[in-house]
Length: 380
Image (cartoon, rainbow, N blue to C red; front, side, top):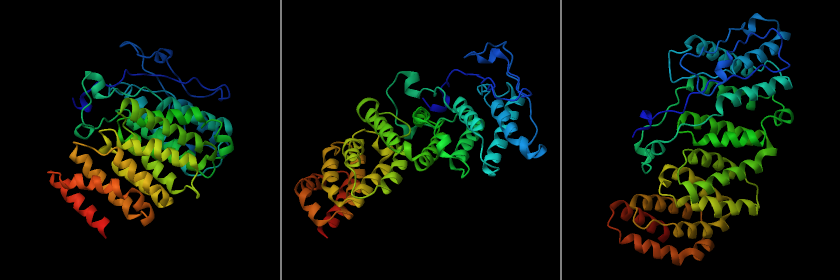
């Protein structure tokens, strides 16, 4: 079954009630029937009212208007029916676009209540139940993700702008991390990480950028983020072997590893041994092997003494009957050996040559060709 044909999650139409500190004149009108998880066919659609443009109000009043626009955007629409609430959807889209432009323009530091409402609005829009994967719908064994069409969330016209708003807020020089960390906390970060399992590649790309920026700006969250990513890898390797965002998480880690200080902490070496090397085990390693290989090589470049650990780890998970996977391993091994010092090479030389000998007897042309290139590299 193609992903594009499967049913999405049950539609939700939810609304966030205006904060107590909101102005009494806030122009938000929400039908309370929209708070139910699945509105009945006869339920009234949520109504939202357009507010003035920022340029049409005096500068001192713009933050209050920003807050009111954020409150409007807590209304979440059902995109399974493109015709339902079309005008209201367009009003929200335009409002979100105005919010993004306001933050991007650097119009000044947002007051703490406004920052709190911004994160609340983002949370209401992006934290949701993700659609089940196609194999979960049918109960059949998971198909090769490379052969399936990517799932594209119909709510993306709004989701994209919400992600853009969060990104602009995080990277803004006006954002005070001492205040923002009260709302971009551990719970928020964990829910961001949960969304990496989204099958929409556009969403995962935004999540990757946002989490990387949070890691860079909020130093207090760095150990927590690394540990949380470790836990995702452990569950993927030893339980599910199915996750849409492993490649994106590895891309973030590639940048993080590049910034590790020397001498390398024991915590980071354990991460290599317990998480990165075992990521070669799943049969879908081809989906993220390029990013994984980059992380592995980064470790060896940082600390040449890890070469023996890496080579022996690759040999431990070496594929027996999967020729395509074996070609990937040979390519990665070549990259590792290029940055390996002679002393470390001698430590793993015997088991390495035994594996090369087995590969030389392979009847698969690509394996035979790759191992000859590797043998030439080793001999030189």
